[in-house]
Every structure is written in C-alpha cells, then in structure tokens.
Length: 131
Image (cartoon, rainbow, N blue to C red):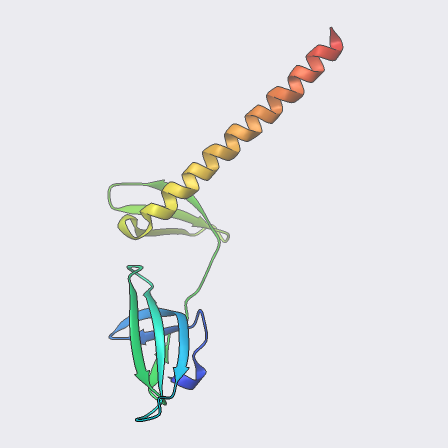
C-alpha cells in the first residue's frame, strides 16, 4: 500500500478499481481543516484526465506494469499483434492502441521515404562521377 505522502509523478495507483497514473500533484495545507493532496490523474486504459483531492495519509494499492519492447506485426478487425524480443506474439485490443499504431506507421513510412531519398541521392552522385 502507498500513502499520499509517497506520491510522485509517473506513479500508478489503483483508484476506483482502475489503474491511474499521477501526472501532477501538490500538497496543500489550508489554514482551516486538514491537509490534502491535489492530484491530476490519467487513466492508463482510456487516457482520461481527472482532477482529484485526497486526504493526507490516504492509502492506495500501487500498480506495477511491465513494459516490453515489441515489434508491430499486423492488425485485424479487433486486435493488433506484436512480436516480443523473446519471439512471443501478443494480441492487444485495437481500440486501445489505434492512435499509437497510426503514429508509428506514419513514422515508419517517413523513415522509409527519407532512406529512399538518401539512397537515390547517393546513386545520383555516383552516376555523375562515372559520366
């Protein structure tokens, strides 16, 4: 269990049965009443932001996520399939990943385009020297 005094940016806690990442936090002690922690939380699954105040000393379950590098293989109607470094295939719901996959595909195409242009420039220089 983790207390509000242990909050730090990037920490993931379980709140209302879902994992939320702490985006920002501030300890406040008003002149009247008890101290509290003002936080901005981001839902790990939906990306929704939430402003929430917690009483000082309130306790939460810490959520540990495993991050692994994986290669995007393909997407079908519902899922996207990835290949991990240890050759395991992982299928994840497409609706949770679609923005990231589209961005990565765009970056991949841009890199391929830039690489092709660089190769064409080198070949043109070689051809000019041989003329």
